[in-house]
Length: 253
Ligand code: PEP
Picture 1 (tube, protein in one colour):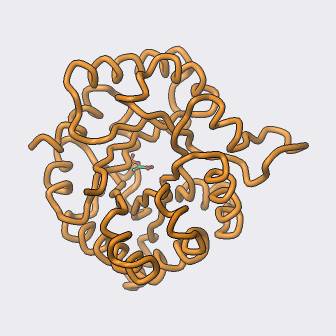
Picture 2 (cartoon, helix red, strand yellow; picture 1 turned 90 degrees about the vertical axis):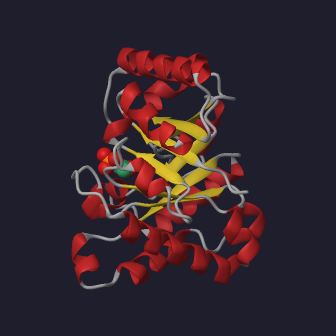
């Protein structure tokens, strides 16, 4: 059966001390009340090595929010997939709409990042999703398919085992506006169908596909009750242990 996952994306929030304190709190909360899903905490690069020391990574997995599209060398300010892996991180988020929009990450750049992350033994949470304009024009399926075609559908079935997908409609990220559970389910079913076309039904059935966009404890049970929704990628509500745990606990309902 495919994995259920709740992954936090801290983004550019919290200094190192606050990040360590939150990681510690999440770790203790998960040890005291074991989750029914895989829990992942994705932190800024600067936090990774210290948070790795705090987390029992059999209980809470660690991820980065990005990695470079180059393996190594004179790329001032960049952090390679190898460096991410060396901190003890197991995951990396790639293709987040904020990276695409604010940092010009194209499908080609993301394809390079995906290759380097996999070559360094990282699992990837690969994000896709449409803008409000694209949804209003009913273009969401073609947009999401193009994002997957452009960066991950070139992978082999073996490589695909390390891919988790996250559908994040851009109009729902950080806006308080959640996709309805039916909208999310419809898109995740579509994504699973194109994964099946590409890799076969058995692989599609094993692929974890998450929903992201203003997911919180109050709407997680309804979202997670849908057959194709395997969990969530969580921004704002991952910054407080109680909020994050509230979402994780939705898998117990
Ligand atoms: C995200 O950016 O991945 C996200 C889902 O953010 P939020 O939960 O804050 O909408």
